[in-house]
Image (cartoon, rainbow, N blue to C red; front, side, top):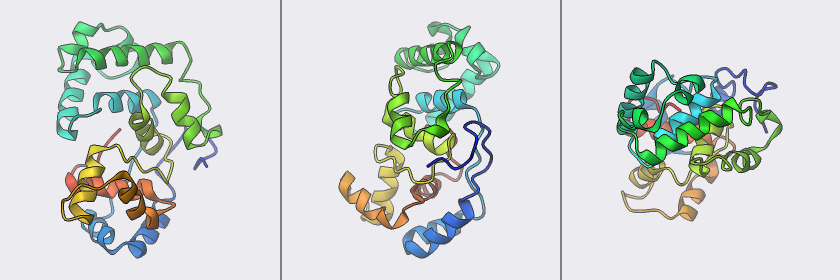
Length: 215
């Protein structure tokens, strides 16, 4: 279920403290990670285009590489807004280090917002799987990108992005002596985290990088 009564006027997640208390008691390994991270928490930007564009840039590359490319895009375009991306072309976007494929995805995403196909969506009326189904109709938006949107823009509390390379790495590191884990094994390990798996994965990301993941 949605966490607010407004689809896009979202603020910091009000459930964070409750989720922390649950997770600290549910998993001693995760509890140690959380205690090292201190009081910081996810802070959304309340910008649907930003979240989706940032996720597209970050697909299948490291957080560091994605940040570098994003910073270059922001500098080149003077910001990452629907209007500024739509006014660019693939060559200009590619000059910032983004692939031809992803540059096409960004332009298509901007067009969807300009056409009103996404910018006016009442996301709060949809459950998680309905949001994913809606978003993956956009070229370049797959399940992972939609899951980032659920976590960082819609603040859905119980998302477990098993396809995320950072989560896969963190799960191996903290729960399986660095050995690979199947999706079923990862899902089983995360079962005690329900209904706050989004918060747990945010802390797992933090365990790999001192800077908060931002989409």
